[in-house]
Amino acid sequence: MIIEPRTRGFICLTSHPTGCAQNVKNQIEYVKSKGKIEGAKKVLVIGASTGFGLASRITSAFGSDAATIGVFFDKPSTEGRPGSPGYYNTAAFEKEAHKAGLYAKSINGDAFSNEIKQQVVDLIKQDLGQVDLVIYSLASPVRTHPDTGKRYKSVLKPIGEVFTNKTVDFHTGKVSEISINPAEGDDIENTVTVMGGEDWKMWMDILKAENVLSEGATTVAYSYIGPDVTKPVYRNGTIGAAKDHLEATAFKITDELKSIGGKAYVSVNKALVTQASSAIPVIPLYISLLYKVMKEKGIHEGCIEQIQRLYSERLYTGEEIPLDEKGRIRIDDWEMYEDVQEEVMELWKTATTENLSEIGDLEGYSNDFYNLFGFKVPGVNYDKDVNEMVEIPSEN
Ligand code: NAI
Ligand code: NA
Image (cartoon, rainbow, N blue to C red; front, side, top):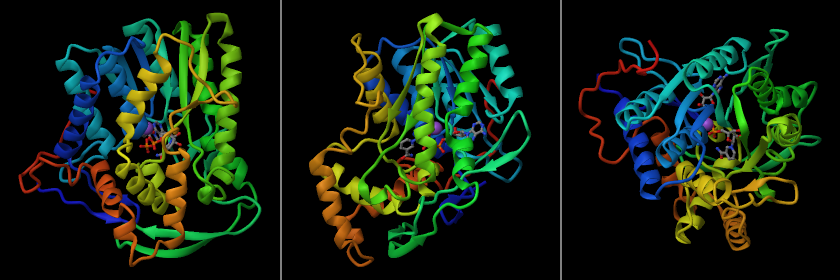
């Protein structure tokens, strides 16, 4: 079939298998071009099919020749209906990994559930024995709690008062003012339950109890801080409360892993266009200005550049991992450079519908968004008939 993008707000209902595969190949080439990393050899990635998790899986496999198990929640294709991008990404990743002689298997299902955790444990026991790195990169709006069966929904709201600021509809380029009402009722608790550290800890608990973590095993989860303009809706909002909880959980996990000399880290990453971040108001305007400034300075990075740098310049240098005053790894350092932030804030003040395509990188934002779904990828012929029925090799 011919597959075209069909967008509705900040989601795209279709995705393109050839474009997704090309994205994966480009990321693999990038990692290979940067040379070998003396990293972990057996890696579990939770949230492995898109964004930072996919980049982590690719960096482990093609930077360190690691065997990888990937966990994600994606929709396979059905006759006449494309699957979700993570599905096509993973199919392409596995194909390339197997071609390179690397072990790669995937589990598609709800990572929050006990069943999927047990399946992963069994697969590790069967194929790898133990893992030495666990990347935790889930981004989800909902979580069904495995103990109670209760379904929690996260919200993106400020805490305490109404937040009013500019935002952009990146499809039309229209800059407008948006007011977001503060969290009420159980909003904060619910968001922490979905995006906080409880599930990460549950994963590490079961992996340790089942003896599938090797001596000195490391686990890394991803967080975000960002600038003052997004603070009320991000870091000081409901999602920020969840990130506080996630960051605090790293210390609890490290305590628990003491007996095997293991460690848990949180890495603070850069703001990037992913399915998760497109849904947050105000952030798209910030990102389009940030992209402009960072590209002009030659320091723009995507997910793969970020994670390749995380591995090669933070996690696996052979020296102690540099941490900030709160014990976090910082790979958002370039985003947070003073001159970058000053310039972004200057642009922020003046940004309007009329000047945004000039002063901001709206095109870069939009392209990245379409790329997430395999569209507008250079070199892909979208007029060509494509088979939407793609299978992940290890899933049968
Ligand atoms: P993403 O939406 O690209 O990836 C999420 C992954 O989680 C996908 O592989 C998806 O299949 C998987 N997933 C979602 N629900 C699942 C479930 N119930 N069971 C199994 N898998 C599930 O998101 P992104 O942006 O890569 O986010 C990953 C982490 O990075 C999050 O913690 C996010 O807060 C953090 N982060 C994101 C930044 C950004 O600007 N995008 C910046 C800094 C940190
Ligand atoms: Na991810």
